[in-house]
Length: 125
Image 1 (cartoon, helix red, strand yellow):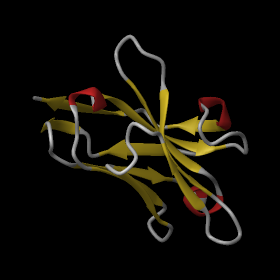
Image 2 (cartoon, rainbow, N blue to C red; image 1 turned 45 degrees about the vertical axis):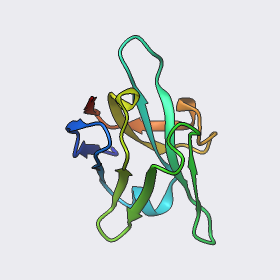
Image 3 (spheres, rainbow, N blue to C red; image 1 turned 120 degrees about the horizontal axis):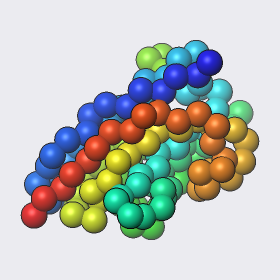
């Protein structure tokens, strides 16, 4: 059973920064795609960022809305994935979820099979 536990959310002023962490069980981080999604009230869950696995080291991908402001990274020794969020905007307010890829599309929720419980990020002006 894979477990993903997010942390690092909170209340931050617009323009500020937060770093989210996702601690995973097993060899999840080093052997799978890992992604971050978010869901705002009344909206569908949307893709934020992903680290895709490959024999050559993998690649990172971002939603257009966060490109240049957010950075996904991983520490395989700690089996943890991070999401550094800078220049936060009010529209970044959402519950952020970490997920493990199941081999499908990295930008679709259907491409992930295990999810964390989520961490709330609230950006105020």
